[in-house]
Length: 499
Ligand code: AHR
Image 1 (cartoon, rainbow, N blue to C red):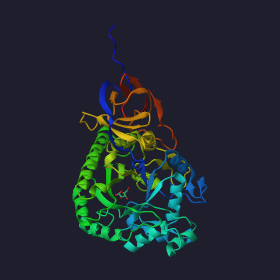
Image 2 (image 1 turned 90 degrees about the vertical axis):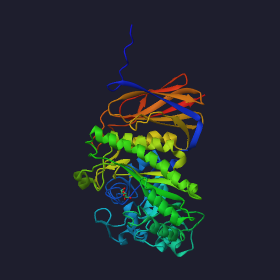
Image 3 (image 1 turned 180 degrees about the vertical axis):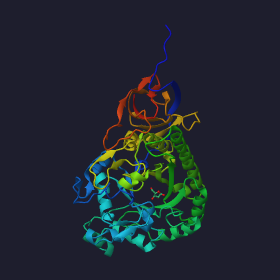
Image 4 (image 1 turned 45 degrees about the vertical axis):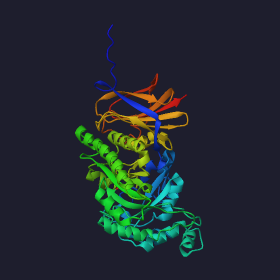
């Protein structure tokens, strides 16, 4: 009898082989690679994370309760705030003290709405404490001053007895906030002041001179880095700052999309997915540029803003706020491509923050407007949940001869007694059986979970919040191989127990 080819999910069956070299270690996957970003933009903060204490929406001291619970369950290693572009027009003193007395300002970055500053430094630190995130404050260089930023450091970190630390205590927080991560401007080549790299480099030197250790916390200063792989900016900046080197360099790399989030054509999706290869190349390239400087190898490369940025329908923005974007199955696959490349380049990256945590661009959560109670976990949330298995593990090398940017993407990490493998199939209609030959370990058994929907435009909506969630997925060990069937548009994480 002739065996019939086995039909899987899609239209044809194909096979891909990878070699995982578990003995070839490539750095630790810092939990900081799974960081998040929150800006005063649209309904990210107001109406998203923060509804206020008097809101009928269930809240914990003003924070949206469901959002807190979901974020806590996922674990947010680091949270960057208050921008983005907004950071370079933010004056932190306007966001402290009794809320009713806080200054009302116009948010010139995101639509001239009235910002009442009811969410300020104390509220941000409170949020970080609730969800267990390390705070990262983005300081104002574009329209601020060295003294303003220096004072923010003192207000946050000095334990007590100085004017500013006593003011913090009077505002309800005798304990210092102990903020380690400080951004020195944001996109200084663009919305953060439209500067030239040497001009910004000079400002960086000036600002950094006044940002000091306080209360035992040495500030980790993150300079505004390139847009994408712009080496002209990186070199111009470091040529100027040298020999004073920032602790981190913030690079922004969005993956643009030509279509509306829930109306993507296959071709537009492919173009967007291909950009993740460019992101990976840019990480490798920027790292090599940094390493070329004396002391440059000590600079942490921070992919400070990343994710898909689609063509956003005006109606959605009107209803839910600026840059509100639905996260579809396509977005979940994109998140998988990004998180996979972070594993592969773990030794070259210090931190990565997806834009943005709630209601803006590629978010973990969406909420139905300031008045709406509903809060939905997106496909991106679930992709992050799949990759949580890698946090703190050691990345290991995966041989991949396939040059196709739309081919199956694989990464692997190891920890005590286990190997964790993530696989992404970005193809719209091609199912794949993946065989990973495991070298340097003895596998015992494997379990896996999958994020998958056959429709690239399917999403978790307010009416169907659990349309796409993680499911158990078969994975098998055959001799020294991990074998997993990947339907089109799927993200899988397999945990291989080792002997
Ligand atoms: O995330 C939205 C915006 O994109 C940020 O404010 C800015 O830094 C970037 O251009």
